[in-house]
Image (cartoon, rainbow over all chains, first blue to last red; front, side, top):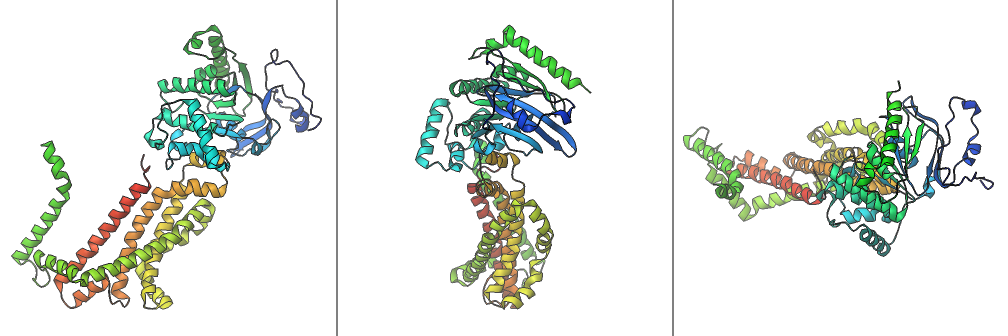
Length: 292
Length: 255
C-alpha cells in the first residue's frame, strides 16, 4: 500500500467515474492489488471485485465502483437489481461473498458510518424516548454522559426542528420519526451516511420537507452520502451523481453527474439541466429495465 | 343519554353478576337442587365474609398467594434469562424445541408423584412443581419473542456498532417484552392452578386447595363455595394486576 500511485486527473475535467467493469474476460482481469491502484482522485469508497449471490442467483460478480468524497450519490435501477443489497454490503449489514470494500483505504470497522432506514418506525427503539434514541450510538461508543449531552444538544440546535425530544417515537409523526433517525445517524459525525429509501414511507409534503432538510445537512457538513432511491426526481434533485444499475448480474449502467448549484429549490425541477439529466437517467433506466 | 351511558359504563359488568346471583337465588328458592349441595347466595356470602373476618379463609388465601408468588418469581428468574439466551440462537432453540414443547404439554399434575419423590411432601415440592410448569410457559414465550425481534431494529443496533451482548441487552430483551408478558400472564395463572391442586393432594395443612377439599369432605357447602370464589377472585386479580404492570412497562405495545 505504501507505493500506491494515484493517477491524478484534475477533478473539474474528470468527474469521478467508476472503473469499467471487466466484461467477460475474467481470466484477463487484473489482480485485486493492481486494480486497487486505479481510482479517481477524491474517491471515498472503493469497491473492487464484489461478489454476491442469493441461493444460486448471482447478483454481483466482479463489481467495481468508486464513490466520490463529500458528494451525494444516489443509487437507482430496476427492481431486484440489488440497490439496497449494494449499500447494505458496503455498510456491513449483510456479508458479501468476495471482493473488497475500503473507505479511504480503511476497513469498515475503522470507519464511522451512519445508516437511515426506510422503515423509521421499526428502526427506532420505541422503549426509549426520542432523545435517548439519539444518545444511543454515542453510548455504544463509550462517550461519557456529559459529553454525550453536549453533542446531542449541539445537534438539536443545528437542526432547529419543532420536535418534542422527550416524547416516545410512537408519539411522533412519520416525518419527525425519520428526522430522529437521521439525527441518530448523524450524532456520531459519520464519515459516510447511508440512506435506504429514506422518503418512501413519507407522504409527498413530508418528502419535500425532508429532502430540503437533508440538503441543508449536506451543505452544512459535506458528509459523503450514499442513498438508495426508487424515485428518480428525489434522486436527481438531491444528488451530485446518480449511479444507474443494470439488471442482475448487476453492473454499472451509467454514472451521471448533476451539478446544479445549491441550495436547490422547487425551481430546480424545471431547469433545463435538471430536465435533461432526469430524461437521460430515465432513458438508461428504461433500456436496462426492458432488457430480457 | 350519553351522560348516563358514561356514568353507567363502569357498572356494566355488575349486571352480569347481578343476573347470576338472581338465577342462583331463584334456583335455590325453587329447590332445584338439594339445599345442602346448593346453599343460598346469602349463606355463601356470609361464609365468605366470616371466613375472611375471622382469618381462617384469609389465612388460607394468604398461604396460596405466597406459594403462587414464590413459584412465579422463581420461574420468571430462571425462565427469562434462559429464554433470551435460547431465543438469541435460533439453531439452539430448534434443537431444544421438542423437549420444551413436550414438557410444556405435559400436565403439571402428572409430575406431582415425581416431585414428591424428589422433594418430599413439604413446601418445596409444591412450589417447585408450580415453578416448573410456569417456567416452561414463560421460557417458550420469551424465546419466541426474542426470535421474532424486528430485523430492522437488530440491523440498526448492528450498524451503530453494538456487539452481541449489547444487542441482546439493549434490543432483543426489549423486543421480546410484549411476548414475555404474554408468558408471564399465562405463567402466573398456571402457577395458581398448580399450587391449588398441589394443596389438595400433596399433604397440606393450609391453602385454598386444602380448605376446598376439607370443606367438601365435611360437607360444609357454604365454606366450599366461599373458597371457590376466593380462588376465582385471586386468579382474576393476578391476571388484572399483570395486565396493569404490562401496560406500564410495555407502553409502546401495539403502537
